[in-house]
Structure formats: structure tokens, C-alpha cells
Image (cartoon, rainbow, N blue to C red; front, side, top):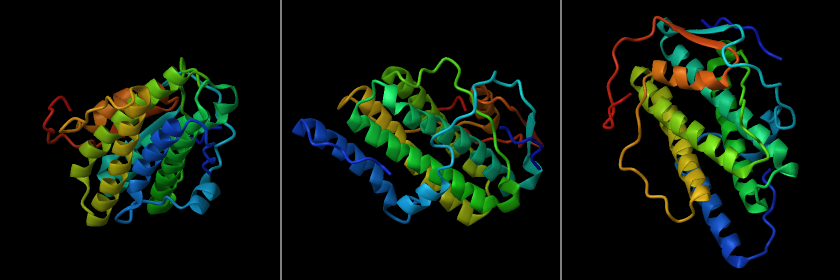
Length: 253
């Protein structure tokens, strides 16, 4: 059970420098590889329908200053999906704010197209999880990004890298608690998208220098909660959290 109190398409790329256009086109093609194998919800019409937060964002508050948001792991798969929904709401709100700030930011037009695609993916993930949960997904977190300037490219990309890395580690760690094969498959699809986001953001920060690690981090829910709390006004907590946890190859989870 979750106890909370709700709180208050891609643009075309202009043809300029041909090398720049090829570079961004390659990145966007890379992102769209997530459509292979039936990956989750990337249809533009779906994204347009669920993008209710693209033009507005909650006023930033202090992390952990709001009402309690408690996920009860006794509910099994429902709790794991709720946990993922918290993360996806944070990511969707972050990228919605990024897109809203384009008019005054120093993010290039080509990069704006990529970040808009990522925003659309995160909105789709959020709505997919809401749909999978039904009434159990009827809650809204209040996110905060104090100290992040959404008009500054370096600040946006640095924060995006941290969020994407956390998302990958969170899905990798949570999948071991799922019992439904369908939910395991959904998590595998979503985490593959998040990993492509992480790679794309790194390429934007340092073009053509990113060398992927052979293994991703695997974090237990408690570690993820402690990290994501810095971006949550709600006080995130767990009840009946599983004691057992299988570490990933990088340990430290």
C-alpha cells in the first residue's frame, strides 16, 4: 500500500553543418533501437496524450520535507512496480523541465531533439507503469531539483547522467524480487531503454569518447531510495523490505 497525498514530438532537426547533423541523427537512431523487439510504448500519439507535465512543473521544495510515501513490499510485484513508478515520475519531471527550458537554455537545437526523445520515453515508461498498476498506481510524487539550472547545458547533462545511471542500477537490482514473467520482461525492456539514455547522455558530454563498461551497477532498493530522496519532496520509505539481496558483478549494491 502507498500512503501519500498528491502534490500539487520531437522537433525536426534543421540542416546546418552536415557532420553535426549526422552525429545527432546517429544518436537519435541509437535511441530508437529501443523499438526493436516490442520495447515499451514509444508511439508519438501515446506520448502526446500523456504529456501533461511538459509545460508546467511543481515549485521546487526541500527534499524530504513533504508527506510520507511508503511502499509496502509485502504486496510483492505491485510494490516493485510502485517503486519503479516513483523513479519514472522523477525522470519524466526532470526531462519535462529540461524541454520547457529550451527557450532560454544554451542547449543546441540538435541536442534539444535528442533530449525531447528521451523525455518522451520517460513519459511513456511512467504511463506504462501507471497502466500496469491500475488503482495501485494512482499516486503522484513531488520532485525537486534544487541547485540544477535548467538553462545550463552542463548542469542538465550532468544531472541527466546521474539519473539515468541510478535508473539502470535500480531496475537491475529490483528485478530479482519480481515473480511474474511478464513483469520481468517489462523491466528488461525498460532498463534497456534507460541504458541507451545513459550512453547517449555520455556521448553528448564527451562525443566519441564513451567506452561502455562490461557490467552495470546493481543497487538494492534502500540504496536507490537514499539517493533519489535528494530529488523527492515526499519522504520515501519502505515497509517489509526484503532482507535478501543478490549483488551484481560490481558489488557495492
